[in-house]
Length: 219
Ligand code: TYD
Image 1: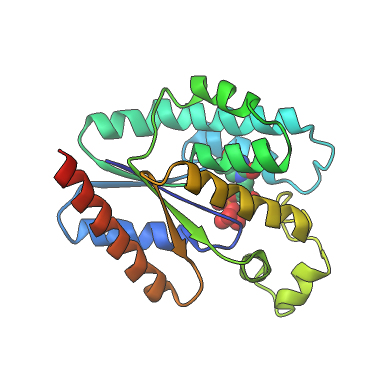
Image 2: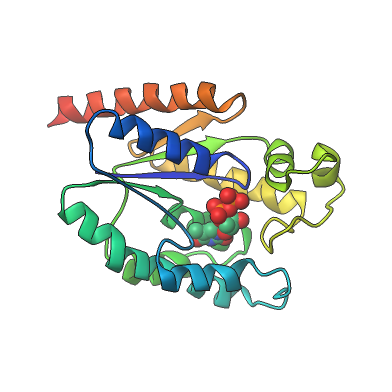
């Protein structure tokens, strides 16, 4: 089984992906936890380029191709072999991030899905948890600083190239994810990501149970 977490910056995906991995492990499942961009030595190098705040001149198409390149390596080197070995794979982001950040927010549209058809080797999650949170809250969490919402509202640059985008851009990202969830309700479960990590984890487990129940009934 392949599970992904999606959401805006600071939505708490990494924490929730790790909590779900522990939960599966406590149930004797063999779990592989990975993240995008990254998850392989090549992917981590690409990640460093993508998030470097000095590369403000990066063209949108370059950005999209680099995310796709990191994803291709992750699919090939890590995810496909893990699924073939019967593991449960949890990825902190997958293709939906590119469809929303590059396709919607950067305006690249359908080119993103076309390029990524090659990158993903057709691997799509069985279930995706979309952690939905107001970007003002998310950015404040992501920036880990005391100025909190004021920083997001005043468009103060964050510490990576993507977080440094303004609030309107992050709002477009949130709307993009919600639109994608409306398009694929059978795969994408929207989760209210406000509250404590434990509260959000409980919501994830509840929705996972419902989804697993549905899948069982259909099988
Ligand atoms: P991530 O490490 O998930 O950051 P965070 O934990 O702060 O959300 O992702 C890094 C950034 O890369 C994030 O701002 C979203 C962006 N991103 C894209 O723009 N396109 C993509 O395809 C992916 C995977 C990430």
